[in-house]
Amino acid sequence: MTRKKLDIVLENVTIESVAAEGKAIAHTPEGQVVFVEFAVPGDVVDIKLTKKKKSYLEGRIVAVKKASDKRLEPFCEHFGVCGGCKWQPLPYEMQLAAKQQQVYDQLVRIGHLEIPEISPIIGSDKTEFYRNKLEFTFSDRKWLSAEEMESGADSQPGLGFHVGKFFDKVLDINKCYLQPEPSNAIRLFVKEYAVENGLEFYDIRNNSGLLRNMFVRTAENGQVMLIVCFARQSEWIAKLLDAVSEEFPQITSLYYVVNTKLNDSISDLECVLYKGFDAIYETMEGLRFKIGPKSFYQTNTNQAYKLYSVAREFASLGGNETVYDLYTGTGTIAQFVSGRASKVIGIEYVPEAIEDAKINAEGNGIVNCEFFAGDMKDVLTSSFIESHGHPDVMIVDPPRAGMHPDVVKVILEAAPSRIVYVSCNPASQARDCEMLAQKYRITAVQPVDMFPHTQHVENVCKLELI
Image 1 (cartoon, rainbow, N blue to C red):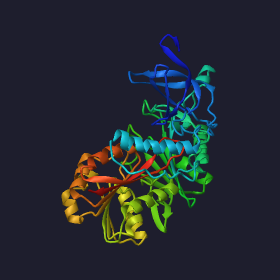
Image 2 (image 1 turned 60 degrees about the vertical axis):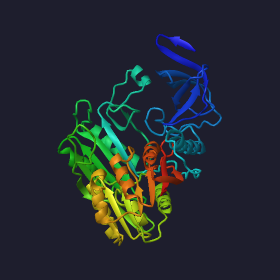
Image 3 (image 1 turned 180 degrees about the vertical axis):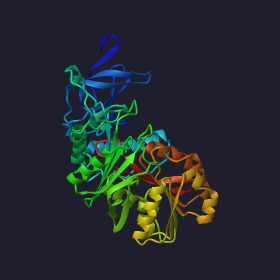
Image 4 (image 1 turned 180 degrees about the horizontal axis):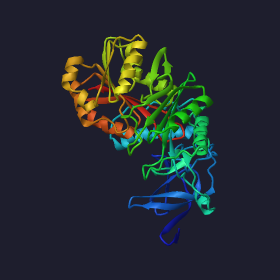
């Protein structure tokens, strides 16, 4: 170990295993745990400490003395700076094993839950270009690397992703491997057009500028939706959108949003259809789902089918059940299971998503689904259940934070025979399942990888009434 001022560098440290949150684990000679990003088991590295706690240390790699024989060369030029795809050096099999272990750790070691043997994780057929939605952020001053700053480079406008955990730092992206074309081409064209015409990129600290962010949504059938968000009204809105439309005739839905708020959320703003159709569509087992500018749809389309298939299998429906689909989004799971149920009730916070769900159900000829909009803890009450029927099965797919305690309380009071819990965060899932454990036991667990090269994992638990 060497010291320089307040800096501490741990030399020749062997990386032992993969940990949660995209980090890897090593130990100091004294036995203290060290967490480090972008490392592969078997690497021998020098680590500069960035955080020192009594129970653990955190650091970053400053030198790879000996690369692990399992280490892969990252395929993306932005690796290590961009906040995503941190597991590129890890072989995919190791990624899947780490995610499977993560589910076990959250449910058993942290949640203290009794579970059956976890089924092998379902991997993704695509590990590149698998996303159907990406959000890009404009910045008047793109992120500069240390080398660029030392060379005296001026900070230019950038369009890309936030850097790590910095809300105000945006990395200008040349090529992203997450979403298929024309995603990269659209982003690069918009940036070039804006720079050439002197359009102001957003300054998040001063809430100034014109261009804020943009969303690209793609469908398996080739349909493309573009949503460009502006900080104010301007004659340049029409000029930019016309230029994009002319360059990319494959854009089937072109929207814009004027956002004068201090945050980038568009859920409470009007999305103005500038040109084309009001939605794009995905299909699944003959069902057609409308996806509007605010609609939630699983971002890995192919894996979504596998995930929903697991949820339907765990629901064990015989055809006579009343099913409640909580956090239904655009009603994809509700409609996916409707053919095997008597009635399905879907509840979702976003009103526009519920409208899409109703349109989807009507278009698919489904007559046994009802959808309701509102905050889950306010909608799902004892009186609501009394009015709409007792649930035999509940399928829940909450956001990362999990379910509100009031929602869990109502579920326990309703006591459906089975609960299928779909989660993008096994930690909050474990917490909620621990609350449900007073009446339920977990009888099946199935992880699904929706996001290759990241630490994120989707997990499905089947709970049965004791």
